[in-house]
Length: 187
Image 1 (cartoon, one colour):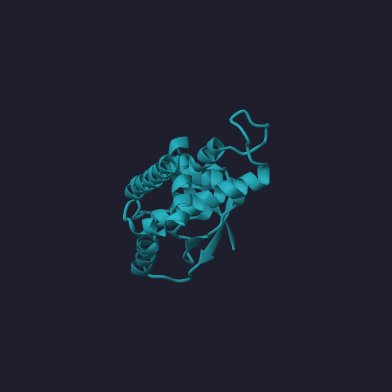
Image 2 (tube, rainbow, N blue to C red):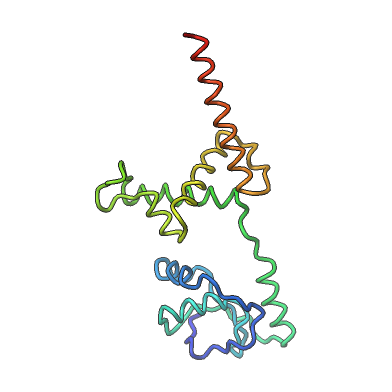
């Protein structure tokens, strides 16, 4: 159902930090609201504070909402906390794979950049970095790691992305060293 944003009672929220609202708003402007906010029958906000704040920055006057019906104060608080606590962030392995897929899809949509002085409208790594709101170096590392996971699946066992990247660089250096040694031996 659609609700007028001005009718929603925000109240006291468990979440105190509302970071990256601009990025969420940018995504919502591009794709719309993917997951509706959640309210009770009195239009008290239960879940979706960040989505609601992003909608406000976009000057939306209404938003898609799911009505959970009559709830006690305790049930409302439990649902809000449940949604925030049970949300599982992606592991670094899923994150780098998703970024690689985004980069690939954008290149298919816009055309791949062949050089750093590419044709206007073609998609570069820097465009993916900008879309993800991160540095080109960070995006480059993640895309490199996504490819590395295909060659060396054992990297996925690493707990930290930085550790996996260091291990990938060591594996690549070893392969290069062995290839050079083989060439020297053959000559």
